[in-house]
Image (cartoon, rainbow, N blue to C red; front, side):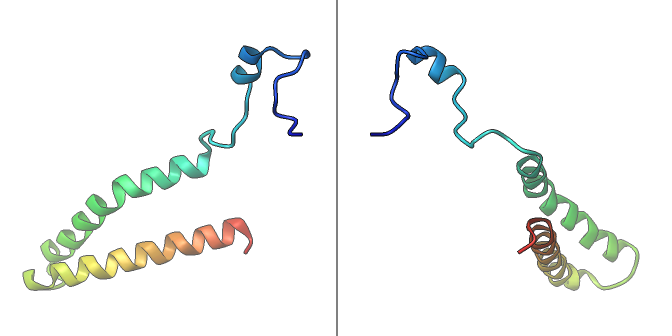
Length: 86
């Protein structure tokens, strides 16, 4: 029988109040959400900054954004790969 059933040691309320289900937010989850929210606006700004700096023409803004997006996803993958040690 599972050990997760209520027993005399703890009440149902106490068992539910102090339960740890693994869904607690972590620093990694906050950073992932921050990357998710800010990556596209930041990359669009960088793509247009390259245009404003005269690095390429206006027709190259979308390919520049695509390259930056691929690079950002690859960098995030590399950081996660390194951080988890796999």
